[in-house]
Amino acid sequence: MAYSQNASELKEFEVMQIFRSDGVDSGPGYWAEPLKKTTKTSGGKDVVSTRKVGLSRLDDSDPRFNEWRLKLGLLLKQELSPAPQEGLPWFVPFPKGYWLYEKSKHFLVSGYPIKGKLYKTPQEFGVHLLWLLSSSEDRRDCCCIFCNTPDTEANTSSSNTSNASNTNANTNNAATKAADASKTGPLSAATTTGPSQGQTTAAGGQEASTKISTLKNRKPARLSATGAVSPAVYQPPARMPTVSALFRTGELVWYSHEQSWRIGLITISESTWHQITPIGHASVPMPKINKAPTDIRPFLAFSVPQVSQEALKGLSFDDVPWGDRVRPLQAAGNHNAVESLMLDASKLGALKINRSYSFFNRFGANNGTTSYKGIFLGAERIHVDDVLRISQTPPGQPPQNAQQPEAMDMVHFLLKGIYTMEASAGTLFFHGDVVRLVQSPVPEGSSILTPEGLPPVLLEEATYRNNSSTAAAWKWHWVAVEKNTWRREPDIKGRFYSMPRLGPILLAPQMKAGPRDKVAPALNGRLDAVLYGPNVGETKTRAETVRDIIPEHAVFKFDEQEVQFENDV
Figure 1: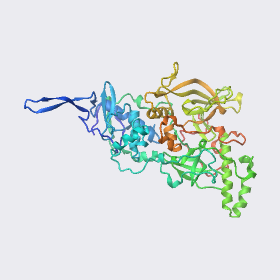
Figure 2: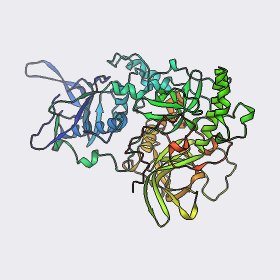
Figure 3: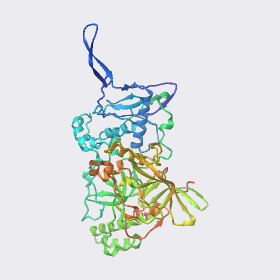
Figure 4: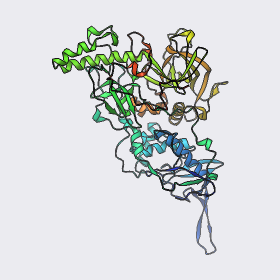
């Protein structure tokens, strides 16, 4: 494939070639249509005249074509790279059978197996490329605007397009194999079932990453400056977080264990797997385990059941002399009793962690007010620029006995700052904007947030709903309900997870059934996840919070650019 190479002004990038394709655009003439009349040549032969259907096929070296390739590279790098802001920008050539056209100053991507379906934006096409990078051959696993259709349309189109892919992949997307789990008592072995480890596969991100071939030439491929727009367009917004959007080091999570779920702390996070240290008591070390995201659930996905032993009820984790209780059991070789005791220890340990908080990345202090860039709030690790689930009831108003609102009616909090004040010791203050997802037509006077200004999690949510909505004309938009407002600790329910990330592992069956824009993962509020026990409050560090809950030698491997416990003013 030839690209424009202007030796005077060069920009390096990494070419990310996608070898799998279902594209059917056969090249010049693909969009030519015969006219109803024929003409005769001077030789007397009949010739069928043709015309274009308003589509102008761009040349391979057209700067506008290269602009799309760079935009696709930005999107895929943000999704697939463990460090998207590092290294050279990605340049993504179109898979075989796809091409860019221009029509009335608009750009359209041709090649989808159903000829009349054209992608209008890099975002729309990029979602389909993510599916091509996976090992799935089931179009229902694709979240793009054309594959992700109601069942009635999908049944018709799938028979015509199921053979279009030229890949040898033979396994389904791992996300669709994750079992849906109950929200009650996952630690109770007698009442809880879950997917066995043998029935789950690696995370979709792992599948996708193995399908990318990075072409790192000794002399990197180069793109003429005239073929690229201003670099500012391709740089992620300054506010865009680089931390994981789903599971993060230091977080308390549920992980699959045989036919049930157990609780552990993520001590190492990689792009496709997480190392988890089971919690209990430090006197009984348990082996660390590696889990794919499909085998993990946010802590707030389930409720923690009561301890099973009567003698422990009403006690906090620190009230129990765990060593004194476990030593006689170990001496007697009663391994089942030790395991049962550690299960109860994990419940009380989870309660302690969830009712505590610790700061990191101190930003500044002035006139008795201290600001931070991050906080371990209970089970979760929260950074400035994250989006939080908050209480629907405005501050200062008592809750009403109203029906639970649908997910799209709930408000969320775009976090801008975390503060403490000497005048209000022990109180957490969260500063930011209250936002809501609304469907067009947007209410008059609403302050619509532009896609360029949205954090990734909000952009993912709106894009997913717009691509999967059964009413294509009703588009979703994020609007600001309150700007520069304040919330306190009891108002914060937890992190907000976008549907395309959390849905496949938490609500796999529902995600298969439409309309998908009516489905949302149900998560507990932070202070609702455990209904008993004292409030712990602030601890110095995360390690101090979990002291005695995990062995001393278990350490968190934080990215130093993400989490620092020193005062980095």
